[in-house]
Length: 234
Ligand code: NDP
Image 1 (cartoon, rainbow, N blue to C red):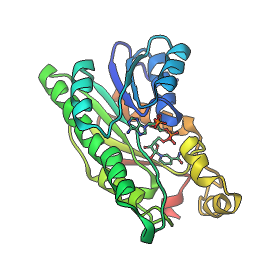
Image 2: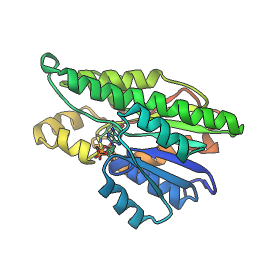
Image 3: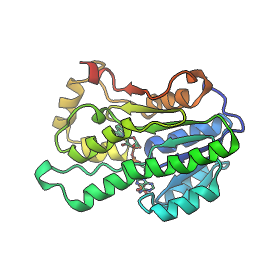
Image 4: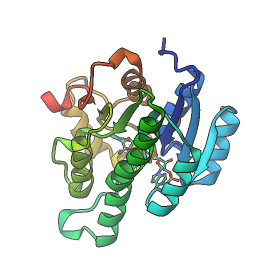
């Protein structure tokens, strides 16, 4: 069973779809008061229908000033899951300035910024908090067409403050996973490099995030928890 988060105030970014959505639902079911931040209003509406206790926060994290105002007003939070990210895969020689800027803004800049806002709130309250950043196996291995994505996730692994950890999943078949890994030849080549012989399920990632948010990992900080079926060590 999941640890209890009764009464804890949690912010989950990128909670409209995929892993972030599943984390928001799991935290809410474990008793937390969850604010779900995402960019598409319809996703948040359907999330609130699925899980009525959740508070929606519709925001584009690339907008620094909007994030400052909205996250500041929605807090304070003791738990933060920085999950929102974009994966715009481009061959290295064709990387565009726009894709680079968006990826840096969302995958790295917004994590730093939202963590600053939430950490200030934690310090002001004197509350023990936990931050989990959703990184990737791509932070530690080069992958074709992933120059920008890998680099933003590497930068993310280097960020540490309060009690911060990352989970680093292999491919998960969310929208992001499907867009980039539906080609059977490409996905077979990746699965062949994963000793456990499969991609991760959303729940594999959610369980690791809940562990790192909970008191059960109180002595763990600055670490990257691989959820990659052994990819990095093979
Ligand atoms: P999805 O693309 O399925 O979901 C991402 C969510 O983040 C969406 O709700 C999206 O909203 C939101 N989001 C993206 N950009 C912004 C923004 N600027 N402001 C607010 N919200 C935003 O991705 P996954 O669930 O697959 O990925 C979640 C995390 O897991 C990411 O950090 C990803 O890098 C990481 N990861 C994923 C893997 C995979 O194979 N799927 C593997 C390893 C790591 P909208 O759709 O409205 O833009």
